Length: 119
Image 1: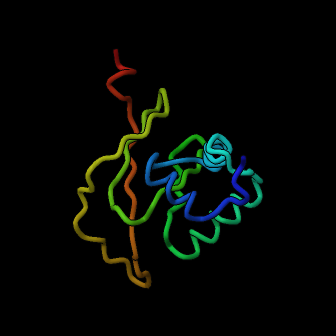
Image 2: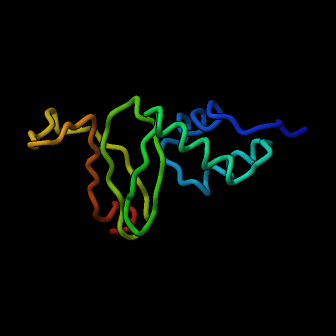
Image 3: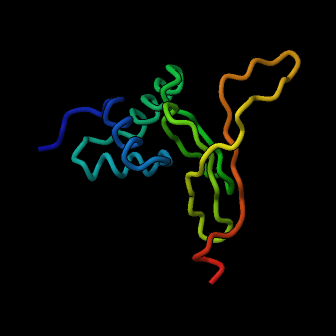
């Protein structure tokens, strides 16, 4: 029997297990886990999680927008060939000083070719 609603905790659980996911991937995975999926409800839940600063929305190239949890800071490396996203340690220990702007977090994304695609 399908669960009756899509909840923010279910989305957070998916992001905890899968790391970065696009909206369509979240919809698909929730359906696979027997949630009754309504795409609009998923995006509304994502918007609420963004407003509460529990998740981040990132653009990792090629018009791809993904979501991830904000509770663990790290950066990403994206393969320009296969699109694979690697999680890497954050190397920036300090935020830059930007006049008139208060930074609350940052993301660095490195683009290149992964080892599997260079073979």
